[in-house]
Image 1 (cartoon, rainbow, N blue to C red):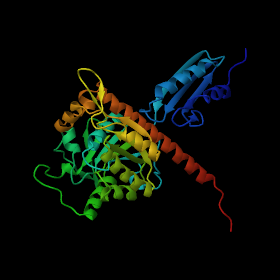
Image 2: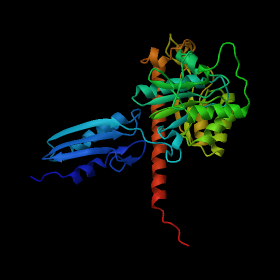
Image 3: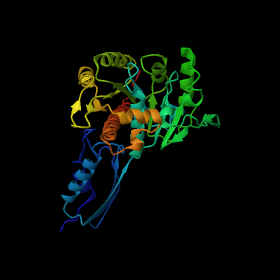
Image 4: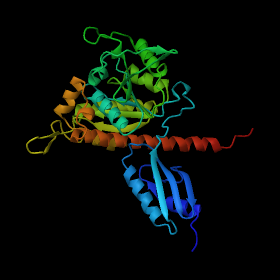
Length: 367
């Protein structure tokens, strides 16, 4: 009987394709520490993010592929995940420990952007990723209220701001420094931009897979500052089904396109209401606004978040639904959206890797 070889194993494993990246798992470097000894096969499958929607499918495909290799007596696979770098860390030495920065934007206020940003951050953290959350809405910081940690001691050590920690998240917000109940933030654009830069660059974020930046609504100084200060993975746009919200969201998309900032996709909040008596979906604010944006501007549609009193009450009382009712349909909608967002970050990371590899092999022009 012919003994199976490592090349045969890798050849079979290379038939397994990552559905998001459209590449085989061997060429993507997802097979680690492969050992083959007398028909005993062992390796680590390193997925691109713990929140990928296809992780279970990829793992199943790998097991099927191995089962088709003649000569394998025993098979031991360890499954891990290592989030890919979705931005150029070589360029950004100040934040070299943050693999992905996701700006969460909206064209207008009132669409529940901060609620979406917070619950998505919590979902990514629950998946096993290391996540930070920066509340960049200096004029109206709401993340402290939503997390129930209005009073947080944020200290400086070695000239770095130490973020607060809450439910697995590293959190920074201007709301920790201001009296939110009695004091309005009145600052001109340059000061606002300076505060954001300090929160970004002068914070000890440590090692993060994802830094979620909750941007203020509109196309003002802070989104511009974020886009122009550091390389980011991309922008997630939050909208609601109404045409007025969709129209304004398109303006935000236009701004980021002009700045050559990648768009991760669009999420529709308050998408529908599920009647508690009949379990039917009611599209209170209209239907399909975000999907139309997705199709017209060729950006991914990443999920629908229902209109739910539990989500709203949780935001007001500092008890996010991902913590208080993680098995609810509403929490599942956040989970599905977060997986889609993580998948898009992996796609952007793979594209960045290809571009960097292409630049590395380009011949130097001769004079």
